Length: 530
Ligand code: HEM
Image (cartoon, rainbow, N blue to C red; front, side, top):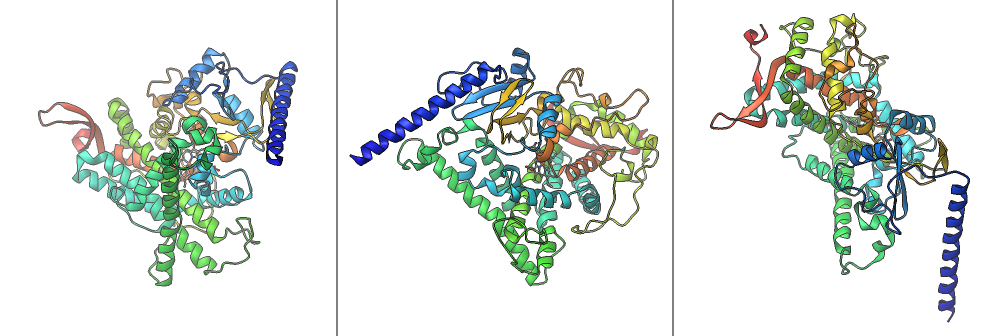
């Protein structure tokens, strides 16, 4: 009897709260505060049927046109979502109001899968702050300079491998890009095609991406289904998926780091961020509390291990994909290759490979202090700041156009807002998921005429200089923007310029001599240059 009354009272309470919330929302609307425009939703399911499974960035950009608003709104059960389709809106909210637009959405499946250990999916709290500031420190522009010797040596290996196997250009750029995070974080030399940890990192990223959207999986919309028994239809699948993910995360976080620990104990360790950390902390597990740092502002081991695994996950896949896209983009645009090669010829000549000193003002090299956490400190003086007309301006424009033309993370990683906000008379409620549509921003025809065309020259002014658009939306926004972008920029630039300086990327031919859609590298001889 008491149970029955309790249930009835709870039900009445819930109904009253829902009613009050609805009345409050109607009252707000009556004050002229409406959600941003968007497709009309249906009862309960909201806009679940309007969201395409693929190429959402294009659908959202289309909605922006259809509803004549750069910011659009849709609703899914339990979630309000807003998409920002213009640079102005992204800057206004993610940057100017960064204090409230920097959380990540609360998605049940992300928690069940154990993905919150990673900085990209952490909530906006002290652990995130400490972890992110460590990554920013490790990959600040001056610290990234320390990786130049490593990048040069890896790029030379890549060029030699392509020379030996001209049809494997994509495999070799992936090897170059994918092997770097493992080397930097754990000091491991890996073959990305066969390495177990590279494979599980790829699987983990793919698993995360497949559920990191409210409507992607039922448990995101109706979290209580996690309590349902496995034998009910639809429950076993997501529970097994979550268990597999936890297993992979555990391996990624602990096994690699513990391997470095063993190497340190045996005196077998090479340079790496993990080895530096282990040496510095000398295995002391000092002063822990619920925060990520100790009183000297240093991360404790658990938080540091999570940061290393984050670097492995966040850096590998994005950079490998960017370089794969780069090779395919060059393949489709032979005239771009020819113009870049002429520039390299004029600026660098044929006696050496291009180097970072030939790079035209990428904006990454303002300060150059010695990093304290780095491996292999760069010792030679750089020549940034030398006359820009002696630099590779067109190659820099290609680098920017590559980031713009095919955006690797077209919708970035969704942010969430931690307080009710009003923007241009529209209400954005606390907890709303806020998506920056980087693709729409980088394909805005007002900023980038003929946005579907691959035109590096759009970044060059009439007097032959680079303009000030460094396509940062490709790396996200505000306080959550990519802290690895300086490393990414160096890694991509060096690979692209080196490829261009040694090879033509052309279409391969099948056995009958017909061109096929996969790339092949042809070494440029001195006659080709002439
Ligand atoms: C071409 C390569 C890369 C691209 C296109 C890229 C892009 C992005 C984007 C779009 C975000 C989301 C930003 C936002 O939420 O607004 C992000 C976040 C992040 N990236 Fe990258 N990234 C790249 C390489 C890297 C590298 C090399 C590292 C590590 C060294 C890295 C580490 C991270 C981390 C830790 C975050 C999460 C930041 C946070 O939530 O506070 N990324 N990246």
